[in-house]
Length: 327
Image 1: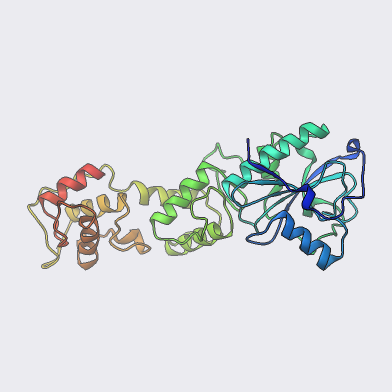
Image 2: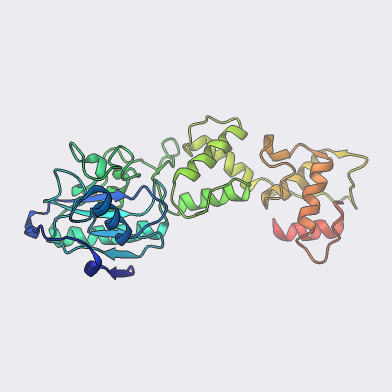
């Protein structure tokens, strides 16, 4: 069960009433802000728009807390021309939402569906209503998520929903959420890409799309911000490279003179497999078979994490022994 706050006694208006049997839709909104509460939105709606009642029956905060703002039988002002038959839920954010918010929305939407006798197909995004008016951010951006995906979570998949069981059609893109997104986000973070303040939250928002786009540019992939088969293959190689490598038995290598060959590549691949890249973002992340300054720096960074190793950038028997434990 999600955490709820009853703030109904703090909300303005609420005088326009309906019979709950009139409710035919549940509308999902986003606030187009990075923060806010039911109270602050109500203040904006009343003082800026001059409405007597705020736009939302429920507001889901960034931590997943649900604020109950109005009774079911109150007509709020979420979508102009559609308010009498609609129950409005707002998720705080602008195209990027936390896992806890999505869990809360799913629970609250299912609860509302049960109360009003609705199905997932009756859950619409703000921009899916005809002639959308109401709140000033009513545009193609609201609710900031693919509603076909949302309806899929709620148990009524659209024919347009992505098929992820096939390696030829699998992809992740804006609006997706879940463990696959979170794993991909963590890989990007480990590679040094910035995912903003929410990090690996399991939600494919704007920051994730930017990071994927940059990753694609850095690795000479198709640049579209969609994490598809090609991008996943490149990421999988970067993640797993070296995991089965046999490390060389040389007593030690130093950066001068520069060593090269399959043994060096095996060390580089082993380091890369645990995210100590010779040159992250470069072609193959610097795995080139040459034990130069950048490889020595990767070894040095790895050694600095081990209290029993000297941080000198040299690959020796002690470094090899520790590395074998970690890959």
